Image 1 (cartoon, rainbow, N blue to C red):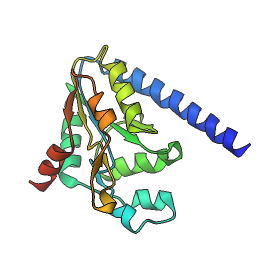
Image 2 (cartoon, one colour):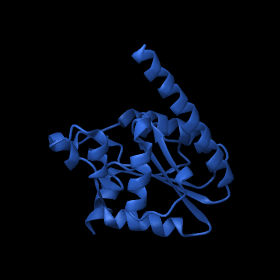
Image 3 (cartoon, helix red, strand yellow):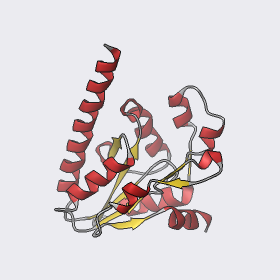
Image 4 (tube, one colour):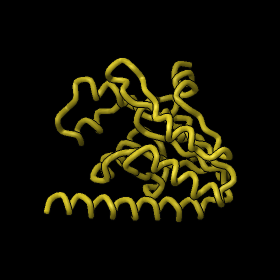
Length: 180
């Protein structure tokens, strides 16, 4: 019974966030859309995985923002011709803490522009959908994992399937920007 409940919750979450993403991107289709990942892009997530807090919500609250890239996201969001989305791969029950984290990081975007999916490939599916009607999309995402173990690995299958018309800014550029 518990397993069925989890499956239904995940299905409902996917339907909700995919639908919301499509609707909000449609409404913003005439703008340049900037889509930021959260973990290891806007926030310095991997240190929280080294000595992991067993309470996932508390761990997510403790992620330190990368001030420079969060400031960039907020500056972009303040433009009338551009809009910012946060698209992150997290469990759906972390929505509230994710929304609060974005606010605390100083990124002034509406709550309905913060989206959760369950995997990096689902981000690519959404990019493929909205690239049909949104002509200016910039996707800023490290597409990496395993930092906490000292060897950065990449979601290569997801990254290679990002639509060609989407301007993709990846790990190395993000890292260089944060260091400046």
